[in-house]
Image 1 (cartoon, each protein chain N blue to C red):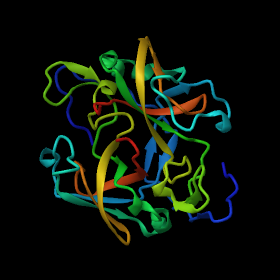
Image 2: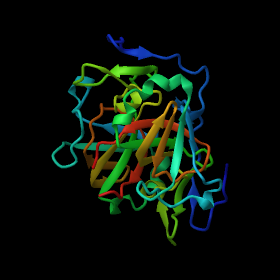
Image 3: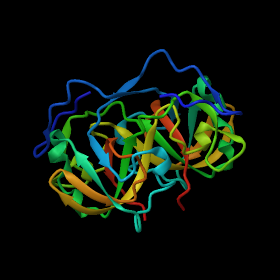
Length: 147
Length: 147
């Protein structure tokens, strides 16, 4: 999906081939249906409870997850264009390089967020701290050990 | 690449199709040539200086990167098996679910590390805090705002 470029933004030609492939391992369920509704940053304390629904194939990979208070969630921002190299960040007027921003538009649109784990019920994790669209594809869950 | 399973470890059948694709955007250069040599965790203060070499295609995406002291680096652990759901973590005796561990063996072997940015020279970033093999494929660079 290509959003229009804005003044000062620039794109590169994407490589003609890909180098590796991803499996979606579940879906993230949030209250937000449009990008404009998403909070700028998730709030693991006061944010709404969201659900992470894991595909049954990965059931056994959840063993022991409930021991962790904080998780790192990786997800795929599947609506982002991948060829922007300079872009205007939110709330900015001058372009920055893509790698100097956390914008969703990047060569590999993988987002990383730290969430608080509220509860686990079968294949569903209830968490706080997400900021993404409803139905966002899930890539990974890792324990977060940083304080 | 499939390492043998150990007692107590189990695997699932991987999906018959993939859902998304990745571009490698550069390579990470470290002193470590074998997995056994890699530190368990990178050290952004006392670790050795390592280099991140960006593909020329993404040159413009580095604009402004030097303003950031800490970066989040995502890379692809291309030697890991992807089908393990229960595994014995390093230094443990009982199996845990893959999502309760930060093991490289996971459905989408994306690693996330916070590094200190020491310097930038053209397409090369000099950083401290990496823990991966030499020649590891790079997926993303983001500023890290967490303290």
